[in-house]
Image (cartoon, rainbow over all chains, first blue to last red; front, side):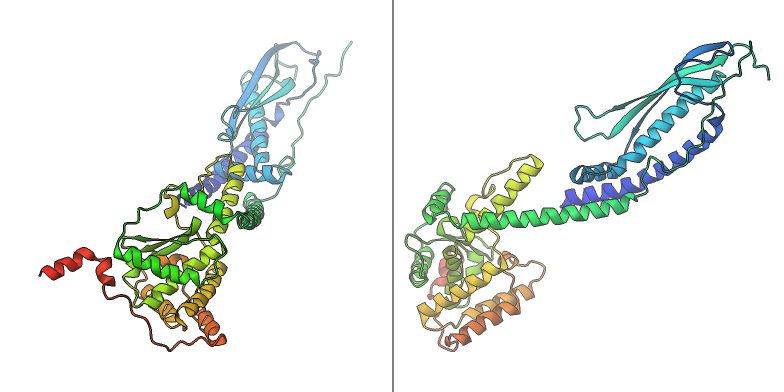
Length: 152
Length: 289
């Protein structure tokens, strides 16, 4: 009985805290994406040849976790099947955050383009069953830093 | 030769492409209530099938199972002898199937309780006996418990519990299949309201067979009701498992009326020394004074 009350309490608390954190994170992601939109990140594999560039590997890495409430909800999704909607925002946020961090690194290096962008996703729960619902997303690409200032 | 430099750009991606619009709380409530309904239904179905299967176990097997648990050492006291002879009288009139024997155990504890368990064992606690005003109400109590044994209620209740906990063990992966728990035979099994009503009816019939009237039965339930009423905070254990509503008294009354079982005959008092048997030390002290 007490265990049940404890679980319900945890669900309520984690629901409010979790959704607050998520809202704040989305706000920050959208703001930064607007700012960094002028630095394109593309997936082509051949670098443009019209200019001389210094090419550097840039990485953006993030580890995110869902809250207790959403993990509980995911268990329910697991039972019934269908879209695991409670993990969708987690992965969406993690991918965008990783790309943003990569872009921020590239912007510091004064790059004008990132090409050959790739993602790696890893779940961090191996061995601990369903106790942890975290993902790691790594975005990486090649930053093109112009050697001479562009003619414009 | 001059190339047109290639242009690269990232479009602004609209929100909500990778995330569904379903509100997490609404999804949770929907899925959770469906799950609860499914679990409830399967538990009910499992319980009913366990109950049905357990009733098919022969009584001899049930008695053997019960004898694997610790039984109280019934001392050869006056009260034990009296209760045994009374229960013999009632069980003779209860139409028990062949091979079904009743074992009565008097427990010297101040708990207002009486219950029947596996193997025809019936436990009567001093606390309850102390409150009973006459032999008829005591007989009704015993007859009610004997009727539970006759209907195989203990093993059916156990079968229901075992089926549900097996289902839980499969679901949760943790097996705790100890049949009766740490208290062994002293664990009180839960009987359904329907079981209680049927035990009331059969008990009343046996009471009529023994005394030729059913006076004392309704007075017993009225008394028990009053006791529960007067002591709401510390409800005696007996009432937690035997819901005492006016309905129940009415059902008994109707049954007695229908069968024209007299309710106004003289009651049989308890043996003179009954209170003495229950509280030997107290009476010794009184005598010394």
